[in-house]
Image 1: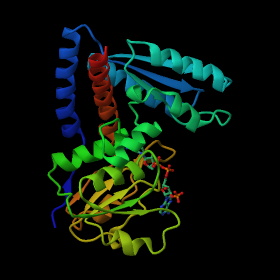
Image 2: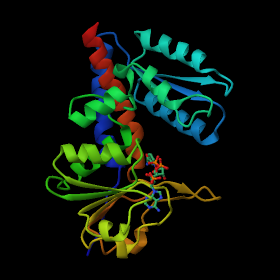
Image 3: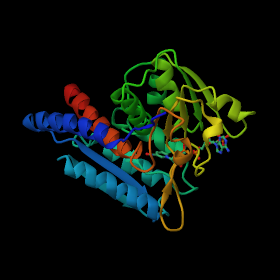
Image 4: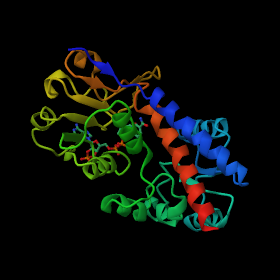
Length: 285
Ligand code: NAP
């Protein structure tokens, strides 16, 4: 069987063209979409992700700002900073780069961000909207996966989707998005019994666990679609997916490669959400 590689770049490019058009229209009415990314501490990987987000926003002609705070910042100080951003009419998207230091309660902080500016889609209001199928901000990686499936015309309705990984960032929201599109969804996690029996029944297998090359041919149905979210780095900074793509080639119909599969979609969806936030907030002014 010929295996098609589902690259993210053409999907991201198509969306970037739309985002550029929207930014152009917003600028005509005097509004420049602005994203503010909050980062606490000196975690190198987080600093890299944050600067990638800023570069991508700047490249599309959006405004962006990185707010850096020392690990010693208190919850109250952070709450005050977020409150200022919530009130700032020129700020449309607010993102807290995770992880944050242990002395700050992540759940509290995510609730302080105005849901209308919550472009990561982690506020409980937006999580609830996703669950009941109402418009809101949904997490970026799951949205990117949906765009890839649509772009490559992979049927969803009535299909059995098996998701390995149940994080709030990837596993749960992508499952909910697919359920909302009439897929039959099975969630798996580290306590799942007989994982392979379940994964090998999937029409679409989504893996988000962070274990390099965990999924091999014997765990996947012939002709399935595999969406690989995993990003595991070795000491040489090479990145590996959760699926063993070389082993799966010739066995599955479609697979997202790592790198260059889902990765390019996440930041693009963040910019998309920020522009949507700017459009909605402008309507309300
Ligand atoms: P996470 O919060 O660590 O969650 C991992 C999930 O995998 C948990 O639900 C865990 O189960 C499950 N799991 C771990 N080992 C397992 C096993 N042996 N069998 C079955 N389930 C297992 O991770 P995450 O934030 O969702 O990220 C997952 C991966 O995706 C990471 O490699 C991350 O770097 C990558 N990622 C990529 C992007 C992108 O843009 N490409 C975005 C986000 C994340 P329990 O719940 O039972 O512990």
